[in-house]
Image (cartoon, rainbow, N blue to C red):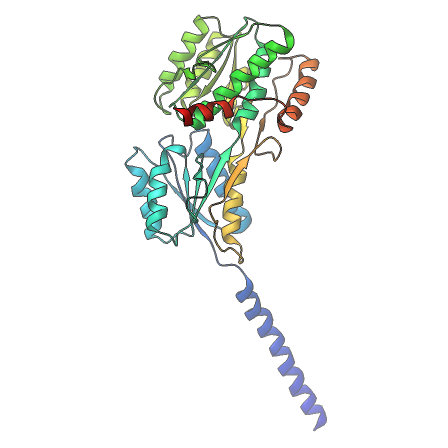
Length: 356
């Protein structure tokens, strides 16, 4: 009788352990997170910041088991339409990519306080508790690119231009120009910058992020004026510039957002370096926060990617383009920027906007 009772109790204990293991595991495992991404008009395969954001989404799918998708915007009126589609689907997080989506994102955040948003390239300054702003100090990495361009040029003329005149574009150009100016100051040179002025805050913009023909046209104009290093800050437009430079020869392109030797490998032979904006990391981190069982909202957080936290950086410089001494100088310049000993020019530009 005692042996039967012991066997019965053993079975009960075993069943209890199995139920606890199965039931407890199911209770504690996080639910699948649904994340929707709305692109700007450059599209998800722009080889630029939309593509970088989508890389972060795909990483979240692989590592966190997130259910990810995207909607491409063909025109500005699609922004609100696409955002609202994800709201109707009750997505756990809606990621909007680009400064141009700021108004549509703000309107949706106000009207849907229980929905969570993250926006790339716009700072809401904590105005909306349900939005995480993902911003990047590309003036810092742009400064390094400008210093590199000034060291690499054979003609003494470098250039830059933008897609649309908005802060996430001009920030690259300001940093780049400041880097050239610092190189001149340190080395007693007089390298000129075409396409942007840090004195007047005026420059060359093609008015879009889609037309490779515009990129080719502007690059050809710069090349005809003697420029042999060009940094296009215009998404897919810049690929037209790369094609023009490749056909011209004896000139370089500086990529933006991604390492162009990877994302536009067909132009790897003329890529001097790239100004890296690690959007994928910031997007992944935002999804990871929402996926956490402890997530209680973004509380209006503003993320800033910098050289110090590897949110921005400079990609590998083409072999032989600059001397070993310049490479050593760049390490020192980088640390001086991190220590805030060098002015990238961005704060002055922001001050001018507030005064205006």
